[in-house]
Image (cartoon, rainbow, N blue to C red):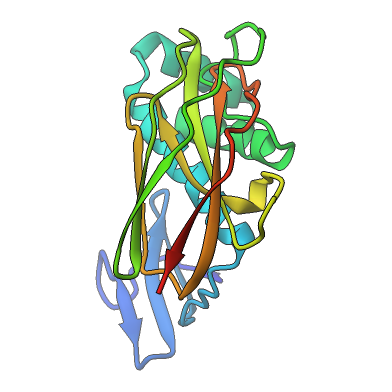
Length: 205
């Protein structure tokens, strides 16, 4: 990556050159790098991380100003934003097979009650899973696990949806033909996870 010290192809230059270089800015700094066509194999780990990232963005937007300030303080020493601080912490939570946390000051507590067993509605290559949320007041997230293995154990790489409370629905697809199995865990706002629901199955023809 080459940083630009002065104007390059004019002020505010951006975009690609001859399908070889791309010009962009990061935090106000212009730079040039090789144009790379993204590789997107959609591995289980990638899908799990993306679900965690999407949840944290949505959860951060719902925080109060005071709650965001907690994350601002958490990221101050590394000069990162409150959202980045929340993402970093919740990626650690994901790596440790824990649920996401809302703010650093939320006290630890007992694991929340489980959600109801999900129901699956299949339409072509798509499925919609629905359930009823946990009754625990401190419940913060629903982690939806999908596997092709009967009797699977929920694990971080099998998370296909990480959703806020009151969502109670996840649509996925297009899926390749086969038999799928799903379970849900509920996360407390301090990260503790409930037991998983019973396993359900659905078939994509």
